[in-house]
Image (cartoon, rainbow over all chains, first blue to last red; front, side, top):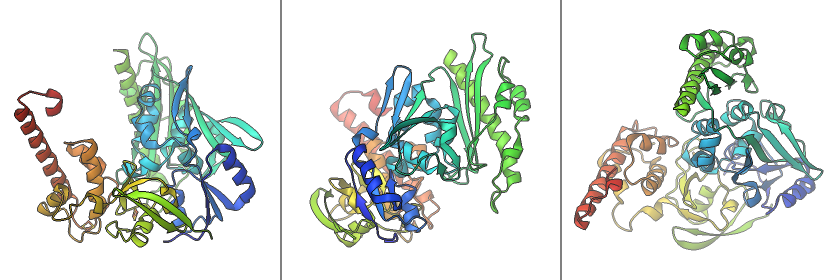
Length: 291
Length: 175
Ligand code: FES
Ligand code: FES
């Protein structure tokens, strides 16, 4: 047993959780799947006075489609989302991203909302949600607000969540017609990425690129969007050489992380390589959908 | 700090245990229930030695709190071991040098147990994926993978035997 002592509450509704968050004050923390928070407790990097457990709140989990929007409950398990055909068909990038998240036992407990709220710069879900321009639903005693993904994550372990607020749902527009890809380099299978690239691409009637998105993760406090690259692809016929030229347009000054074991120079080397692979794979998958 | 009384099912028996909130489920299984088959290596989610099955899913027992197991169905290595001798997975691990010090073994057994429950004859890729979260510092994994492949092979043989015994072909099964 390694964590410092804390009190434990398991509310059954979001309302009850918000009441507890208010009454317990700033020294209480919400626990979702616990795959990041429990290690932090064990290492005493986190020492909350109380934990408010969201695992007993059924309204927070599940994936459903309403019109053309996919609603993902924040407590939806990563394993559940990975196995979901709705996700695979409508939000394939989330599926491919989740394949890289941890291992079967961590995905069985780990949640989509927990990973987003933890905001590890090397995590895949924030990059995926940025690529999809998802909307985050935050609830507090004061009510509900909905903010875009790019305003939700704003630093290493930093999000727009205010005191007393809980991420309850993620809303994403269904994108069944696109090719997507998420590729990354990590030292071991399931380990955190040294750099990752997420790409989406849709093709026009004539086979040219109609729209594309490129996000690079794990190289800066937040995942980075590279519109200059994808702008250079729009309206063009995708070829390997075109993609190779386009990734040259990446502004590598935006890369920031420089560690003893993974240098900035190395990240700047692999970033464009991963971008190229992701864009080409997304293109190939988009082509496959047209056949 | 408040202690909590937790009622759960472990290896098919209803049990009750008193835990501190900060105790992990693996910790509680070991110290409150005396089920020391589940090992704790790192106690912070890295090694997988603590892998158990909770409500049908493999989980890291050190990343779940004992208090969170209220009402849960837990399966540990004690629950998958016959009262005498070894289970087919355990036997194969011994046969194929799938363990040396044995510290990772309970977690490996549980990860493989879950794999074989949902995928009776898994491919090598599926085996690798299933044990990707389990660290072994001794074997180099080859023996563990060979053991799992041997179990998969046996299951395939048993099932094709079943088909002939029943006298009917079943292409889904042999696929
Ligand atoms: S003891 Fe649980 S993962 Fe190491
Ligand atoms: S047998 Fe020693 S750690 Fe696996």
